[in-house]
Structure formats: C-alpha cells, structure tokens
Image 1: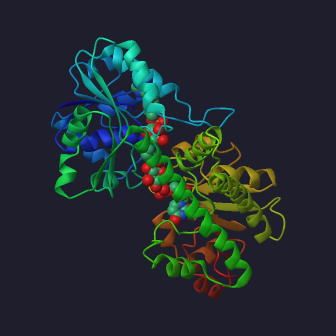
Image 2 (image 1 turned 180 degrees about the vertical axis):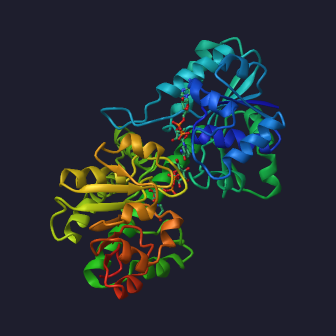
Image 3 (image 1 turned 45 degrees about the horizontal axis):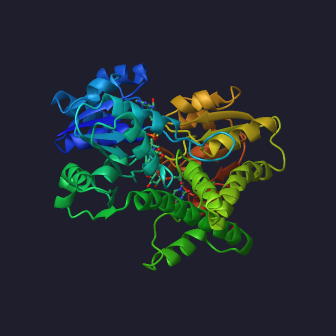
Length: 435
Ligand code: NAD
Ligand code: UGA
C-alpha cells in the first residue's frame, strides 16, 4: 500500500514515520523546500524525542521518503493524508481551512487512480463535506473517497501516543475508506486498540470535543488552585483526591500558568465559533478561553507581586519557555505573554530553555538567552520557572540559593518542594499549595 502524507509538520512527520514503522510505503510532502532538504539529510525540522531515529531507520529501509513534488507522491497512492496546518483565522477565530482546501484540490488533480483522501488535520465539523465537494469538482472522473482520521498525539510524547493510542477514530462513509484505514492501522488491532468507526461529522467533532474537554479540565483545576491559595488547601492533594474517582480520572489535573500549545487555544476558539454560528453557544468553552487568557496575564502580575510590587531594574532568571517540556514548540506558550509583560515592567530577563530555537525568534529582542539553567540563575534577583523540563527538577535549592543574588522564586509548575526551599531561606511561591 502506498501512502502520501501532505505536510511534514509535527503531525505529518510523526504519523508518516509511524505508518512507515508499521510497514507502509510512505511519501511525505511539504511545500517548504528547506524542511524537505533537512529531512533528506537526516536533520529533523522539529524537536521530538525518538523521531530522528525512527525517521532515519525507516528512510534507510526504503519505506519513508520526503519530497516537495506532491504530484509524484500522490501518483499510485492508495491513501493520501492531509496533515497541513489549520491555524486560527485572523479576525473571527475560526479555523483557517485555506491549506486544507488547497491541498485537497492539489491531491485530486494529481490523482491517477481511485484513492482515499483522509483528513488528519483538525478541522471543524462539516469540513469533510466541503472537501468532498472540492474533490468532486476537480475530478468528476475519479472515485476519490473522503474520510476523517483525527490525530490525538501530544507533542513531546508523540511517537508513543501514535503507536499506543487510547483509541483511533475513523470517520467514513464508504466501505472502501474503512477497509483502507483498517489496513493502515492493522498493527494497532493486534494490541487491541479500540478503533471507533463513525460518520465523518462525528469524527470531526470528537476531535474538538476532546481537546476542549481537556482544556476545561485544566482550567477547572487552575481555578481550584486559586481557591487553594486563598484557603490554605493543597491543589495536588485536591487533584489526587478528585482523580482517584474513576469518573473524573487523574490526568490533566496539573495546575499551572494556563494551557498553551498549537492546539488547545486554537481548537477551543474554533469550536466556540462553530457552536455560536450553529445557534448553540458552547458557553463553558467560551468561559474557559477567557479564563485561560486572563490566567496567563495574571502570571506576570504574580511575579511582579512576588518581587515586592516592582520588577523595574531587576534581573529575573526564567527557566523553561516552550509551551510544555520535550518540544521546541512555542505556539501560544504562556511565556509569550509573561515575558513581554515583565520586559514592559522594566525587568531584565535572562532565560534558558533546552530547546530555544523558536523561543529566540518569538520573544522580545530584549530577552537574553543563557546556555544553561545555572547561567540564567547566576546573580539573578528573582527566578521564575514557566515550563517543567526534567532537568530543572534536579536542581537542589541550596544551589539556587548560592547562585542567586536575590531570594524570590516563583514556580509556576510546582516542580520544587516548598519545605526544602523555605529551609534554605528562599522566598518561594508556587501554584495552589496554600502559601
Ligand atoms: P505544522 O504547522 O507543524 O505543519 C504543517 C505543514 O504543512 C507545514 O510544514 C506546511 O509547510 C505544510 N503544508 C501546508 N500546505 C501544504 C501543501 N499544500 N502541500 C504540502 N505541504 C503543505 O502543523 P502541525 O502542528 O503538524 O498540525 C497539523 C494539523 O494537525 C493541524 O490541524 C493541527 O491542529 C493538527 N494536530 C496537531 C497536533 C500537534 O501536536 N501539533 C496534534 C493533533 C492534531
Ligand atoms: C494536546 C492534546 O493533549 C492531544 O491529545 C492533541 O492531539 C493535541 O493537543 C492537538 O490536538 O494538537 P499538546 O498540545 O501537544 O496535546 O500537549 P498537552 O500535553 O495536551 O499540553 C497542552 C497544554 O496544557 C500545555 O501548555 C500543558 O502545560 C498544559 N497542561 C496539560 C496543564 O497545564 N496541565 C495539565 O494537567 C496538562
């Protein structure tokens, strides 16, 4: 079976490499020639643990290749996945489907035999129908089936999530599309992964509903963390006590600076817009978006308050900039709100992130970059931890105390032990731990 994957981003690259690992012949296409060139040379355009090895092995074994030539990749393909971006459309918050529609038409025009066109990009409910119309108009002569196969992988754990997912969702309206998807995911049937076959519309909505639900869950625990701070309760114990109830579940109850990333912010916004337009506003999702936006801004105020009401003229060390650990992705990262606010308030910022490539481009030029966590911390008046990379957990409080000029530490991910910090005489605050 030959597969073409349109888009060599976080999703296209990971899913393409994983399908190749499953034994399929995969051709990954991107319009960005520099990405394709890098991939051909064995260099990954993104940081994702395990990806380099997976790509290298499958490319070497001839199951995975990279090209800018969409026509060549689609020729002879049995299945073509769309894994192009669906960013927020400027002005109205909807998903921008320009890339999806353009790619769908290009695929249809390039097809030389019947194939199944599968949308892996996250697209609003109803998009499949529009893709079908585009494909029919471009190629009335050819049987091109359309399907939806939303992707649930997380960055930083993407390969594990793809290879051992909780479920696979396939939205289909033809036996042929279902048969092709079943074949592609055959290795997952062997590990008894539930494969849920639904209508295309249902599959599209499952994706948005899942992301929005997780965003609501995080926002809920963040608000409980605020209440913990006012009342002396501990949000870790609250989350554990809630999470042990199987109906609630333990995951996604870590309080923090607000969710970021390439998907929760844009997908909650797009879902809210769709629901508004359908006349059934998803008010809970709308509230979640507003609360999360406000929270990111409040985090800068929290740092300023911890520094005694002003950060003007102070040097602040910042650890962790990406929206979560084990990725280089900065899209909608809380640091993009917190750092500019601190710069505007007059602070000098010295930041460190293990994967700073995108952070360097996206943060204000005034932010200085250090080569290690301890280089950032040295002689700082205050320290703020925004992203919980594992290497930060291992830094002992006495080392921080010895290196810093000041005593203020604001830990927005609760990675350090408050008791150990206070034993060192550090002025430590974290999220929802009753201080
Ligand atoms: P991305 O921006 O990293 O990658 C998209 C790629 O598509 C880019 O490299 C771009 O150059 C390429 N592209 C655009 N139009 C093209 C065309 N016509 N032909 C060839 N290449 C083209 O995006 P991403 O993060 O991989 O996300 C892709 C989709 O998957 C989005 O809808 C997103 O919501 C969804 N998704 C993302 C994640 C994630 O963790 N990032 C997880 C699940 C779902
Ligand atoms: C998320 C979903 O988890 C994936 O299932 C989905 O496929 C993906 O979005 C997508 O559609 O793109 P991702 O954004 O990569 O994955 O990362 P998450 O681990 O979900 O984290 C998102 C944000 O929520 C991060 O900023 C993280 O720090 C925050 N978060 C997560 C919390 O603040 N608390 C938690 O308990 C969990």
